Image (cartoon, chains in turn orange, brown):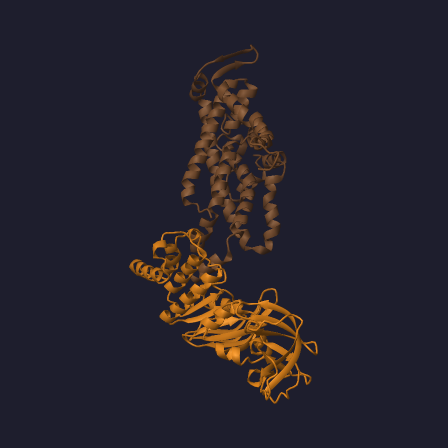
Length: 338
Length: 291
């Protein structure tokens, strides 16, 4: 549905955000872009929508080269973080303004309005101005405005991050439901890992204007392609410990066990608890290993700070990365401390 | 309430401001209204109540009505020119960031330089003999005008100077308002296929409308209260063709010592301005969007 080919974007101040950027997004898929601030994810959405000009390369949507098309002519709808509703227009006008520019007839607009307002549950608020609505309602208006144009592609830039936690969870459910109903293609930016994991059928992990990994949420979490992805995905990110030969070994804090089971296929670690946080259902520990390296452990058992522990990680829970930080096969670890 | 504070202390705190207001603003206004119903003669030392005689006098005297009409025309023309010009200049400057900063300070200059210096320059430029304005007219093959010296053009000449003086201020205020419009609104509009004109009428104008109400109201009031241009450039002439209300009040009161008539004129001025602001707010308030 969206095909990005050899894209380059240089800002007028000379800063190149991305170069030789390629990405294929399948029709009907829900792709979540994640990455640290400045990784280029917002730029990518702005390039796809046409709000930013492409420096080199091309963007194809639904089989058409739209690189030089105006934002309104690309078949995309954008939902912004701060909603970007027209403050002086009523909910109804906010939605119909675009429809009129798209040449829809009066009766058709009325029909679409009723439909999308119903869909987002704002029918009785049609005559209100955005200032009279709550944050969640405003974001629903923005959604309704996007839906009303029945675009091929929805581009969403952190649409839920201005909402408080319970509302965010609720809207997340509504988005998933909408997506089932509309069957359009979604590209979605978020900082919230739970959102990325639960909404996306594909996740693109970005850093420094490049895609570090593109895959299903399961792939990204269970088989991180490189150290960056391993550390970025998961809460907390994966523990990465350097080995003596220049390579790295990684494991998730949840997979660290306490004790020294006999006949274990895996590694043993000795270390001391340097801090503890109560997470409710588990504790988060900061451990200092004997050689001074630090890592995190999540465990349901309460252990006092300062205590020495014998710990282990099963071989199946270990991830290996080569000298360049690229995923490698786990070889016999030898059972020694790293 | 903190210990030591009493119910009276807030009033003590605002007393200085209230006192100044009473002495310099409310007091004189009350006295003006009172004097407009009296005949005061400082030479003879008489002061007696005459009812509506002063009002009858100024409304039957052709000069006052003419001056009142001049003021309305002057106010209407200067507002109708300086506000749209300010908006146009602001739109232009807001888009062209390169020349933006320099021009912004340049365009504001007329508002802050000494008006006497500026008026002198304008009088040079409007001189029928060697003025640059007539030279410019000549370039287009137009006949020269006598500007300030012709009853047909003297008021127009003052309008030009007033517009020149206030447009820069309006521009600056509108630029500030334009820069507060979030960029996302225009991006939404682009996604909505809005044209340039569509963006102006559906986003820019409604968003800056509160500022426009403010500008129209304040420039109308200050135009109706114009004194300096008249006093310095035409003294109301020729034949009262460029005479405005405040200058008429000044002459009637302080040169002819007809205090009662001058105060009657002042009361008319206050009433008229109250009506203008009320109508302006009522009309524009319905269209203006306040956030």
